[in-house]
Length: 385
Ligand SMILES: [Fe+2]
Image 1 (cartoon, helix red, strand yellow):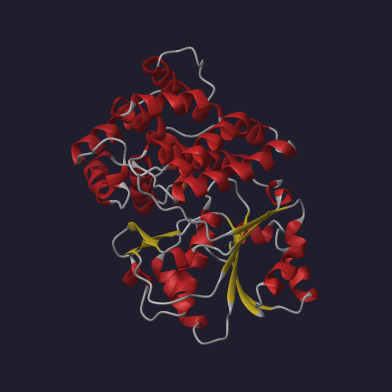
Image 2 (tube, rainbow, N blue to C red):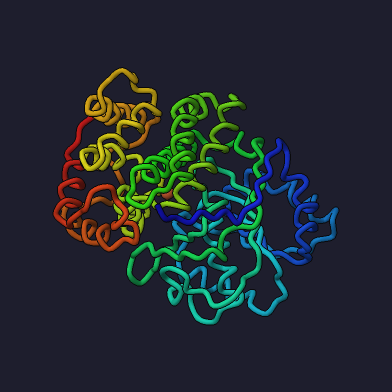
């Protein structure tokens, strides 16, 4: 057996923790930071406790508050140009995966020349970058503990990956109060993203014993708490458990990989701007069903963690899990693929080709061809719940 497991992130969880952000940044020796967030987070007032804390501890800050979903390379390059050489010694990402991935990419470019496109792939960094602190406002991405940044290359309409241990946040501050105002549709989509991370981390070809344990626990937590977190937003315990589960799933896939669900979701995200979690939720049952005979025991373990009857045989349990995954998406109001804005049948071959080009294609439980991707995409399009 050979594997590596790395977690560069200190994790602190406490209700209301964002009001102590400044103390934690001071501990890291930070004096002038760049806040990276999005308009929705700012409008919801989620930064108010953060600002007060920074002022109280004397930490100077600038702010980028217009990060879009599926952050674009041209925006990242523009922001980096503005802040290079301005004495920024750390970044504070407050938001979902888009804000955190943007902060990672901006931080990289503060100490590296060129454009973010120049750093696509694995271990392309030359030296250290300013530390990143993350306050996740959604329970899904896990980006607060991963060493990936996913950025849409505007010219190619392609979501590219930057992977390096140095872009992993040094500190994740989990404040369960921050998800109280999360809209139900976002809680649903991001929660299904977290579930996809856990399932793909467990079933992919590059899992390891540590990621396996984390992934199965995350699947159990999400199976137990996601529906309540979406449908009863005042259920504090469910929202708290989802925040923990998404972080655990992030630790799992960050040290294993994802698979073909993410390959397809990132392809359609790059083309149609489909929310990442929606894309994953749509394709998860189809890819799980396609993959299951590649390792029926592992797919059955996922099924049992989802709450499928443990007395069922592995084949029957995996079959039942496909139905459970369809039902979860339906209960959470996830649209069907045919309902996604902008989708056109004439794009399906391009989506299949882009999926095949994805960094994580090789990690999928079953070897995938462009034709196999095309078949799954076509089946999903024709699917009627
Ligand atoms: Fe994801």
